Amino acid sequence: MYQYNEVDQRIVNERVEQFRDQTRRFLAGELPEEEFQVLRLMNGLYIQRQAPMLRVAIPYGLLSSEQLRKLAHIARVYDHGYAHFTTRTNIQYNWPKLEQVPDILAELAEVQMHAIQTSGNCIRNTTTSHFAGIEATEVEDPRPWCEIIRQWSTLHPEFAYLPRKFKIAVTGGPEDRAASQVHDIGLHLVRNDQGEVGFEVLVGGGLGRTPFIGKVIRDFLPKQDLISYLEAILRVYNLKGRRDNKYKARIKILVDAMGADAFRELVEAEWAHIRDSELRLTDAEVERVKGYFAPFAYDAAAADDASLNQHLAEDQDFRVWYERNTREHKAPGYRIVTVSLKPHLGAPGDATDLQMEVVADLANQYSFNEIRVTHDQNLVLGEVKQADLYSVWQTLVEHNLARANIGTLTDMICCPGFDFCSLANAKTLNIADDINAAFDDLDYLYDLGEIRLNMSGCINACGHHHVGHIGILGVDKKGEDWYQITLGGSSREDASLGKVLGKSVAADEVPETLRRILLTYVEQRIEGERFLDTVRRIGMDPFKEKVYAAAA
Image 1 (cartoon, rainbow, N blue to C red):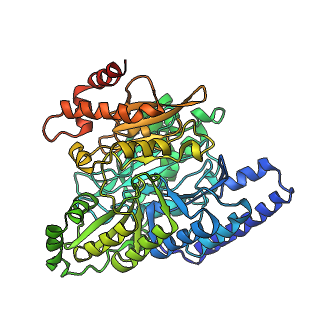
Image 2: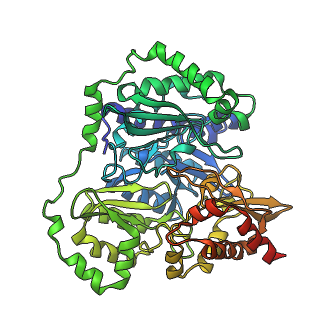
Image 3: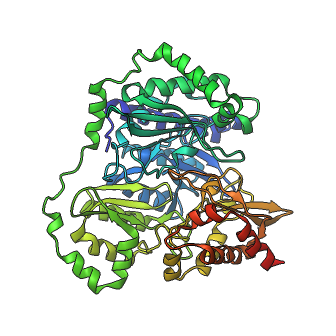
């Protein structure tokens, strides 16, 4: 993984001291609240419903064991003993004291971490697949390109005050685990007819109150032109994006209003002026960054282990976990392990300080000191020998991190909702508990197969409900929580926006509504058909009839 150089470290250290002084002046009454608001947002600090919330950047979801231990330490010393992993692969602390935030940032700087550009109208954390670099199907490892984008975009003076926040995702192969098509920019590493590797470029994706799937504006961009082309896109958006209405300020609104062809023409014209500038990437610079992501020294004899098959045969619980929570690694004898942060009756995406330390220890011992954060709010140990899987599983079981539910209904994406967020209209965590209580039979969940359930507490869609196979949106009706259901969404390579099932349902009706939806699926599916495929094949009417006729 990338390691800070002297300049990187100095910039982060100086930023900490700047914010320390800004916080001191605000608390002393020397800095007006409206001026401090801009400054705190530049450092990832929000004022939420009950306390400040600090969002810490985890670039492209990659953590060292040392960094995860530091995050655990911060949760224990400065918060309530836990933290929340987000769909941007960042981590959020919900209970820090304002006067202690500079101390938290100083501790983060000790392990090459910060909260810069995790908020505000700037380029946010670039994301990618949590299996980047370890899947055999990749065209190329996208992480070096994420790092190149991070270095270009961090504290970029021209793009510090964009019309609205801006998000970029990069994929390295045919499978999309970064929801790239619902980002402001989606970048797909592809191979052209000549065998060259470059980028397919999409713009104008996004969720929120006006969701859009991104549109392709370039089928193939040579790799050396990546930064200059991104700069051209951002310049066009910075000049043309609306600033009079924050709800119409995202690039998706601009691209939709202009049309993709007209937007492409502006970008290409701007790019022509800067393509051959210092922004053009040299082979030496690309190789320098790629050097930080070289493959580990894998054990050539790892595939010779015979103990795994014995454990699989003798321990049914382990076998189920192995089948659900691990997947093939490109190196023989290794597996990719997904650590479930979706326990029964626990807040999705939350991890306690002890759990974070346990995962850090496992990474130290079994996975080359690296941890990955997933778009769907879990953790990954990417490099585990098959001979070590049983020991890893036993430790995860002991600390409630081994629920074998990856890819099932209860592996849900969920924002913190009204319990924490000042923007939320409705609670989400209680609904997640109700769903877990109603669908706790793992055999039933396995029979249902892959189902992506995403839940948001408001139209801002931090839970990505628009692209869930089943989406749940909390809405407020005269002070009561109600929930709108959508079906048929996807954030993967077959990206689509879900369609509203019908009128919203009361909080206590959500589990029964889901039961009727799933019963319809079981009745209508053909052999081997996923829930999403059934919805796309039969349409919404059979689901509406089952849900609303039964409720009448």
